[in-house]
Amino acid sequence: MFYDVKILRPNGKILKVIPAVELKRRHWEKFQMDLLPSERFNSMRKNAAGGIKKA
Image 1 (cartoon, rainbow, N blue to C red):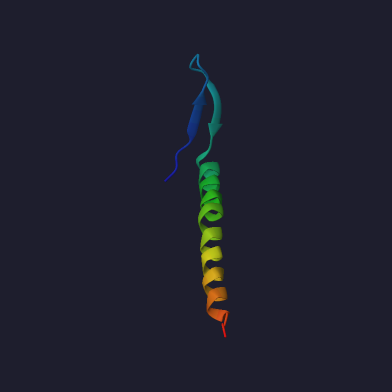
Image 2: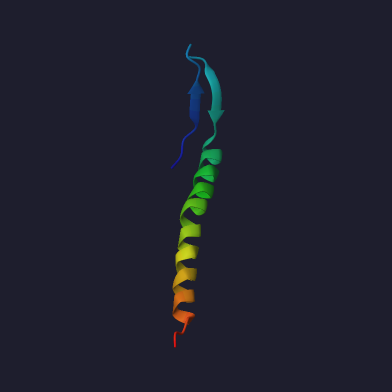
């Protein structure tokens, strides 16, 4: 569960508010970019290694 994040200036006033919807979107985009390419690479490498026949 994500909550709105308030970024404060040094004097205590609000500089920016990042809504929970944006945080959720950022999280899942980063998750897919970090996790899924490595899984695809590993599965491609396994499939390619199994298809090579040595004499």
